[in-house]
Image (tube, rainbow, N blue to C red; front, side):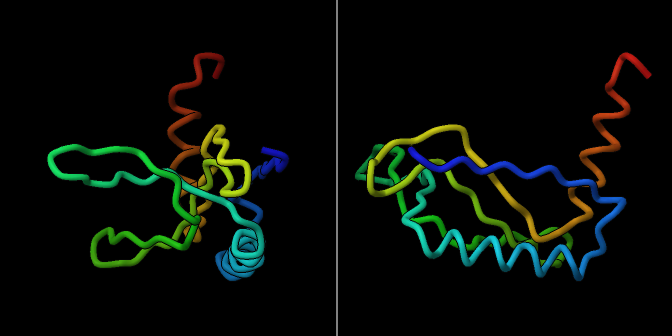
Length: 107
């Protein structure tokens, strides 16, 4: 796969409105290139992983929708790599940073 995605998120310096705007801009990139994500497909009594076009996904936590997208590869080369997920909710990254700080043995 010839595309590298990398993003450092420092939630203390980003407000939610800016975050949503950046999320939308990144999603336009995802839609303009044949990025793919791995999904589980049921075939009879068996489940298998298949590549499908990356798209916006939603899940609900306490009645609130959280939007995200995930990329694992591309549909042109059919190659996969390390998954990259981006959430529209900046609070998710704040919680992750707090958890990392709690587990850091050097603090």
